Amino acid sequence: MSRPVAGRDVDHDVLIIGAGMSGMYQLHRLRALGLDVQVVEAGTGVGGTWYWNRYPGARFDSESYSYGYSWSPELLDDWDWSEHFAAQPETLSYLNHVADRFDLRSDIRFETRVQRCTFDENANCWIVEAEDGYRASCWLLITALGPLSAPAMPAIEGIDDFEGEWHHTGLWPHEPVPMEGRRVGIIGTGASGVQTIQEVAKTAGSLTVFQRNPNWCAPLNNSPIAPDEMEAIRARYDEIFATCRTTHGQFLHGRDPRSAFDVSDEERLRTFEELYASPGFGIWIGSFRDVLVDAEANALMSEFVASKIRDRVDDPAVADRLVPTNHGFGTRRVPMETGYYEVYNQDNVELIDLRDSPIERITPTGVQTTAGHHELDLLIYATGFDAVTGSFDRIEIRGSGGRLLKDKWDQDLQTFLGVAASGFPNLLTLVGPQNSSTFCNIPRCIEDNVDWMTELIEHMLAEGHERVETTAEAETWWADLAAEAGSMLLMDKVVSWLTGFNHNVGRNKRRHVSWAGGSPAYREHCATVADNGYDGFLFDQA
Ligand code: NA7
Image (tube, rainbow, N blue to C red; front, side, top):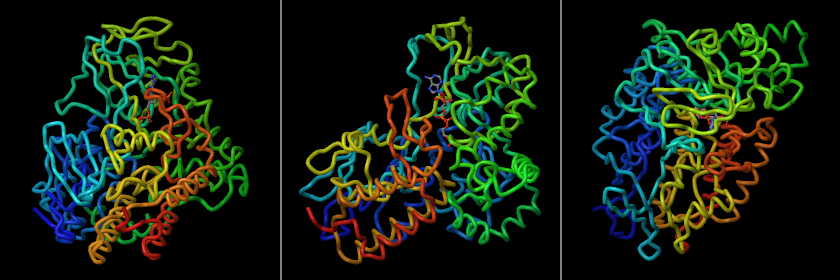
């Protein structure tokens, strides 16, 4: 039993929900302050996204060495990445290694799915209850739920009728799922679908891809890292992380300062070709400065990528279906691929365009579209997530006066810096809504958030504060700023999870779920708030 402030009688000083990358690091930081910290985690192991998303082909789109934690020189010293963009099993091994190296597991309770969190106004603490009967009180409650951790099934009739095997990519089983010789169907062609399709197509007897809207995909250009190259990378870690801090989304790719119209047609084409041949997200976020904000510049880039798709797909009619027409390049999340378009040249792969023939229903033996029935042995749902707020909604979180967080956010999604919500004292949300993390090389933004949160808690301990809460004014200010920052981007007008949509779960209008103003600006706002005595927060005021 710990008593951090004023002899408070609680089970733990801090309880963290989630043992993914943010929960793990937050645990490490707060333990170092001498606090009693308990993490609860629904899974049987650490890793969050990398624990759940075990689908075939899952891997980084960030350079591996820009993705790992930066806070321990020892960890940087003893971990070697084998590829520039590591596959999921390697990342999960890395996170298990971190858990072992820093003895994190001793403070993590696994297989604990939190059901309810209730703020006790009189005792100034949170009561956390889980499905298995676990119940604990804590002074501070920190959510480390991840922005993409509530998998969403499609709203299609007959979904429970299918008698074959089926899986959602975000809830993939731990045991291998055989593909050889089987009739496999997949619904969804976002980042997860694309990675799955290019892998499954290698061995499936047949693969039927049900595509509603094509996305603009670009080559990952992955390669192995030889031991001497890893040594050279290790020697540059300071420089690598310093570079990340300067870019909009903390990736290693900074934007080209030129306009697409500053250069000749030849020079523009040469630049596009170079980006297309270079590894990682450069093609998305390292292009001319106006490509993601100016429709005409964007059209040039889209035209270039469309020509690449047409070059790579043999059948022009199939290529046509793979070229997006309802949004420009980079205005939705760009799935990174390795041989994705060539998959459609294989005899065992068929592309079904759901815009021509929508799915009518799932049947016991397959998928019925308006054009015909597809018999399947295995059906894969790569249909994404109830992004950003979905993982909060699954928990009954009740703040002051018993108000439900879901109701508050359904009514009006407002947070202060993405880390706090008014009416919810002593609740801190790591990488929460309107945080910079969804537009980020996420571990970099996680570290910023955790470090900032840790300083806030240190401040509370130093000042003897028992209670912290943001104000309605502060969150309105931040939500307005987030809306304004997003409005500059072409993607602001496009329907995707980044703009808060998901028709499967009834999210049918624009929501500002993220901070699109860039990581450096986000960090600056956070620093200013702290420098001004945590302006925007009230301490010890009920
Ligand atoms: P996404 O990017 O949300 O993609 C989901 C895909 O599923 C997308 O192609 C959707 O088509 C499709 N979808 C969803 N519902 C349906 C229904 N009802 N019928 C047909 N097709 C459907 O999720 P991902 O998991 O790929 O990626 C999420 C993030 O994880 C990604 O951005 C990375 O950052 C990691 P739509 O485009 O809506 O027509």
